[in-house]
Image (cartoon, rainbow, N blue to C red; front, side, top):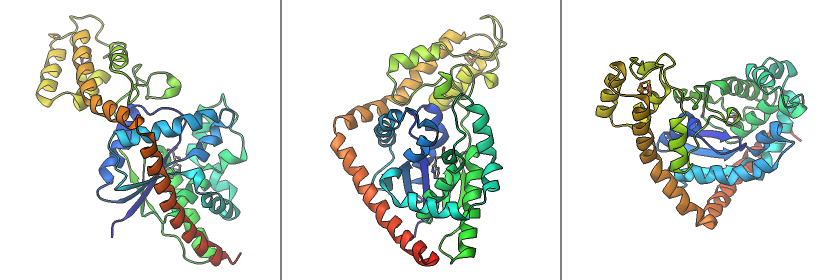
Length: 326
Ligand code: TRP
Ligand code: SF4
């Protein structure tokens, strides 16, 4: 029997290369080894986007199309939409009864986000309870492990604490899931900050080739390479990190040397990188176009996934209701 993993993504916009190399390609690697449940966390998106819920609806289908375009396989994974499985709300409510508020208030991810997203009013009950809903997402499927980035590790820890408390108070229903830490992607945004929609520095997975080339040409390189004749330092250059992924290894060596000896200029270097990046993204863009022309097929996949997730969720809830006796 394969072990089960569960992971979700908040639909708050299109997916970019940070998502691709930070999470999605890892999800794809895991699909052969694990039984995978991947879902759209639309209620989680609502905790911060409650003032403009349109974005959630728009991005949901967009993200699912990207999942399929990069090669997540509906024969190996179950894809579903959180808000379609109402049992998540019920389990969330029950968990809220047994989760001490200090556990939530001391959560480092919570504190960090309140600070970072100070332009939004996140002083809500729903936002504080975010990890309780996440615990419901995970424990509903009795996941053995959860693939997430570093920032989400505290939420998985809280999930284990909630599982332990439930099992202790009522009856052993839940296993304690492990964290499968996804290595952070080295790829930065075009301005050298972390890639993020809100920084306006992202390259999107299925953005047209010309746009990609244009963004690459605007990328900030090694800040010490002011002039064409200055030697550069590839290990400090974001463009070089992209080469390491998208350019064939022999050519990467050549560029590394060329940069250090100032025999290649940044303009040329970026041109080569953009070309290789586009070559890497071409099959994804093509597949995405094909999928866009058969939206009914995509809808069927989600419907199937919702059904499969719903059956497991109801089974878990029967055990939960029985354990509490209510
Ligand atoms: N909080 C996660 C994030 O922002 C998304 C998420 C919601 C999730 N529920 C989950 C991830 C359950 C893993 C498991 O990335
Ligand atoms: Fe970066 Fe390439 Fe310029 Fe070197 S030549 S600094 S690797 S863009």
